[in-house]
Length: 190
Ligand code: SAH
Ligand code: MG
Image 1: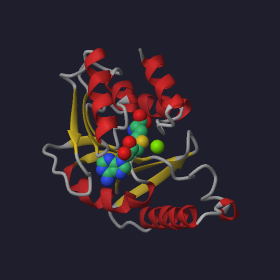
Image 2 (image 1 turned 180 degrees about the vertical axis):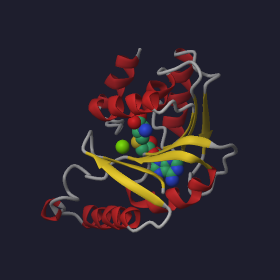
Image 3 (image 1 turned 120 degrees about the horizontal axis):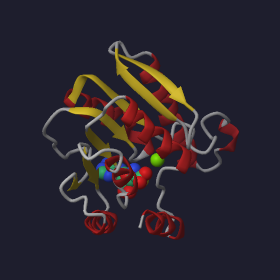
Image 4 (image 1 turned 30 degrees about the vertical axis):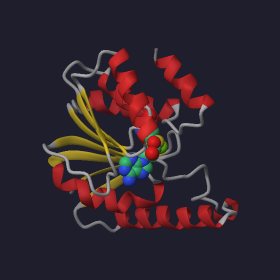
């Protein structure tokens, strides 16, 4: 079943987490006994399902703004019989509301808006919770800006760099970076 989701993602160019990245994140969830997760950017439910499968006590709330992907994610979660442990929200994470307190916020949505998501959702993070953000390398373009050719790519690289700077100078959070998948950051309160 999971392999079907991976296959669909590959064939339809859905940018799900790369294998080593999701594996790292899942181990991190186990090691830190994380139970309540908020995900920004569900796509078709791949990472939400992978995270939920780590432990029966894990609950994932995940937000997706693309209607078709949201619909496919709902189907995948039903097929996996995880509907009691994964709550999907259809909407734009820039404006949707969530309730509760989370041990982990996983930001994996539009690459240029991570600062907005970080600021909007960290009030819902537990004192000892973590914020993990994906795609800090943007396929290597962040490390080597010359690879960014289109205006769109250049703009995104600038915004990702601004996010990294935001993390590095954040008075409340301390951040480490892990080069798995497309590179992730792990932030926690000082
Ligand atoms: N976490 C998923 C992959 C997410 S891909 C996985 O690894 O399986 C990024 C998704 O974020 C896309 O489906 C896109 O539609 C969604 N997205 C982008 N901006 C968003 C926003 N502002 N609110 C909600 N979803 C958003
Ligand atoms: Mg990603």
